[in-house]
Length: 526
Image 1 (cartoon, rainbow, N blue to C red):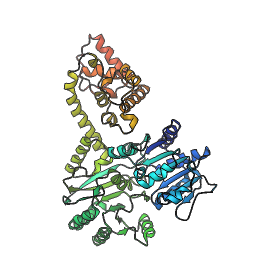
Image 2 (cartoon, rainbow, N blue to C red; image 1 turned 90 degrees about the vertical axis):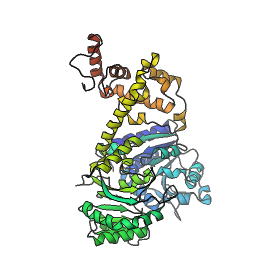
Image 3 (cartoon, rainbow, N blue to C red; image 1 turned 60 degrees about the vertical axis):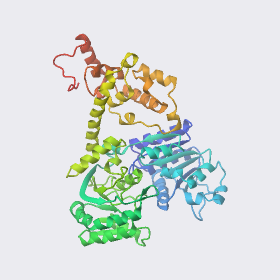
């Protein structure tokens, strides 16, 4: 039986709470490698205990097998397969693991009563938007739905927000690394300029065929570079085409690396994967086969030779190397100077930051640094730089505040003061978030010292209220304290404790609201 990690416990409780509050369709967002299958297996166990029938739905056989195995290991529950000739109808087993391709067939689906399943779990939730998934989900209109996905970008979330009512829980890759549940990422820029200016777009991403052709002139150089960087590491290489993958595998063997290749047509695929895991090969090449449903925790180097503009795909590729493993200290991510006119090409910064300005600073640092560097440290430095720039830009606006607004804290300035990127860059996703804030929300914010007229939607208001309450519980400085001390030039007051801010305000008051001579506001820290 699995012992749930703290965030997994929180995620499970949050999902159940959303369903109990009437949010019938909710999302769980966990990065690759953080045990999403364990979480929804535990949610399934909880619902089965209530007498519910649960459907776990996926689009690939490997994911179905993985879900069934993890369900049995994590909770002891057996499941019945709904795929091809196998059917769950009439089974006494309450959990069905189903192939969407089979379930979406009209004759097959029609055999199920509309109330047959009380809960439906969709692995890789972005597939919910396809016609086949919608057909199945619409057939069970009263069922609770849980969509599970890796950290999506804003575009993904806006699309998912068209179907889902809420986001129950999100655990970021940054938090997972800091908490020690994923390994740190060391990004290394390889100084090879790979020209993909002429590559077209197919189905929303770079054309795999054209990428394969564009890569051909550079493969030998890349193989030589990998000899230098990949020695002593267990490496997975993602390539656009099977032919390119096979050719590159041979090149790696020619330069002295022990490499193998797998693809969807490989008869010995399972044996090759087992041999790689057991250390027979140093490098495993594949044509996008291993993005889902395959885990090898000891992988500690990822080489992406299939550039993409789809953030979730990029994260899935890198995620193959982020799991914890004995003796593994970090993941080396090799990046290249992709020469392209497109600005939406995913780079290492896309793993951590949804803020385009911060991401651009991380990418710039990667290009300028000849050595591998820690992505978390790069993100923290970029956030500090951007925060300083935004503070400077807002300083003029704050000086112009008059009357009522001058007595309150602008919500964006408050977000910057407490270093809350999620507040500063908030974009509403779900319908309820886009609605105007309620009178009750506005009154609460104004009582706490926030200039509520600048809060344009209910989602931001809710996020601000939640943050204010949480900061109060943690004993941190209030918006009014922040406003007061920032007027005197004190910085980062949002990170101070309530008592420290209160003591300094008292000292200012006792000094006739003048800064004491021994204090330099810009550098002062309590």
